[in-house]
Amino acid sequence: MPAARARWISAANWLCHGILAVGLVAPSMTYVPRLGGATDVARAAGLIPAPATYSVLSGIVSLLENGDVLIGCVLLVFSVVFPISKLVVVRLALGGAGAGAVAPRLLKATALASKYSMTDVFVIALLVVASRTMPGGSRIELEWGIFAFCAAALLSTGLTSSVRKEAAGVGAGDAG
Image (cartoon, rainbow, N blue to C red; front, side, top):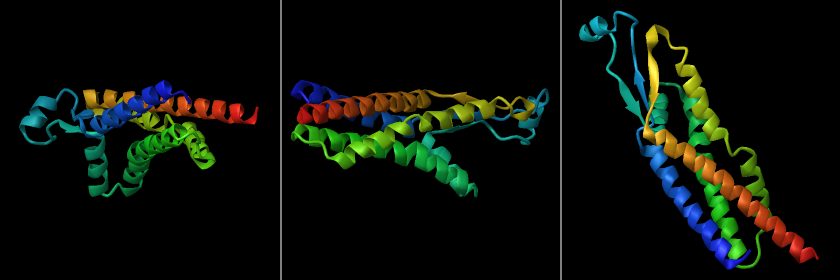
């Protein structure tokens, strides 16, 4: 891989790490409970809670604390562990490419990561769809953190693809 291209991909990878970190802790969604036409009266009487804002991480913690362990763990794996792991694999593959050799295991891991690259965005899409069917007009409002999270997912997909293409080119060049 040419040194200039490797530096560009490396910088984009570090940027993606930062955007992902922000996307995980920034306000991502606000749950606004409603009770139809009686919302104001019910809220004044304390029958419905005030709106609550969650980041991706605080939402997962809330699920785990409230006994929704299965869905909390699934979200933890696909929204936190998997995206971070994918970026680490790309970082390691870049390190190998900078040294002139990309380990075949890293290439396989990168290929595996790219197969599931949009799972984290899919989880967010499910939340948005689910919010459309809440009773009483309750809704989920998306906050700016979710856009940072999705941007990190899209950028990491592009990075994974770039590293795979570069590695495939290196392997093809070595064979010829």
